[in-house]
Image 1 (tube, one colour):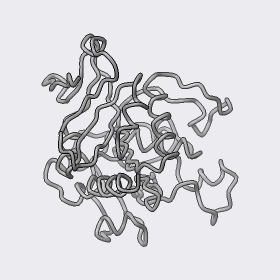
Image 2 (cartoon, one colour; image 1 turned 90 degrees about the horizontal axis):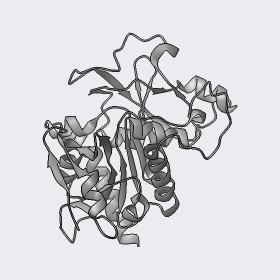
Image 3 (tube, helix red, strand yellow; image 1 turned 180 degrees about the vertical axis):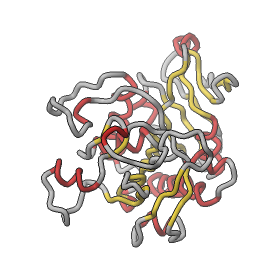
Length: 279
């Protein structure tokens, strides 16, 4: 049963908690019914008494030709098993202490909230079965942290002239690392103009090497694809294996007409098609 609704007050699609409780069996909260299209699963965020996903995520995926399944935090793995790709969206929520560079506790299996646990479980499932993954903002940070890289909880840890938490349509530029799959996707442009709404961030590459006990020339768990001019890691992944994370919000830029940012969603849908055909 599909009870998905559009909520103008949240500028997004979702379902009220009271409606979700009425659904018998597995909730299939889907947008799009093209039998030949791939399906991308996206974990929703939380609004008061609602699950909800901002409309630009849905619109960007639909423009790339995908059906979209909106996932909650109790049925997410069963919902994801019906999909061909995973998108971990941005959002503000508590994440595990071991994600951080100055964590005093070791790694455990304790996640501080349902949303963080759902993100991690979906990520692990997708990696296990080879499903392509796109992480945006917080989603990118969780991809990196679950791979062993470390976060800073705020910009107090570095000196930066940039406003990484900004309401501007274009907050700063990102340098694209050359000779990478992401550079090819971005048509080998040297700089991208991006928006920026994050407070937490990945520790700089030098710190990552130190914390992980790696020599400066050793590879990090994920390849860096983009950097802000203050050294903040803005894009990373393993695109050959279908993993990409970006720190900015390409869904907003794509829906506003940026064809280059739309290519990030085109990439995910293309990888999803290959995954679907390989089943």
